[in-house]
Length: 83
Image 1 (tube, rainbow, N blue to C red):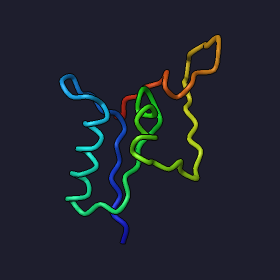
Image 2: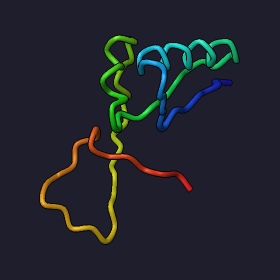
Image 3: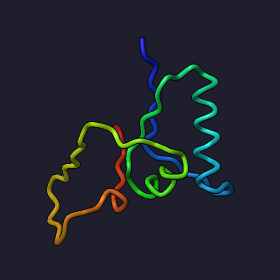
Image 4: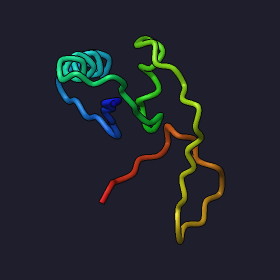
């Protein structure tokens, strides 16, 4: 069995983003997760290199319904809410 942790969106107001991610990874390890998955949206991607994250093998497409966009959105320009 593989235990996977998922992070979709993180917000820290008094702690640097890199430290928030490091603490999150330590907590996931302490809870016996084998793998930690996250999306490259908003400013998440900025810390991935420092944390030695590897790019996954899948491709994720974002679909916006009832929107007209003048240009293609990059992942760091996008956020979403899970319902």
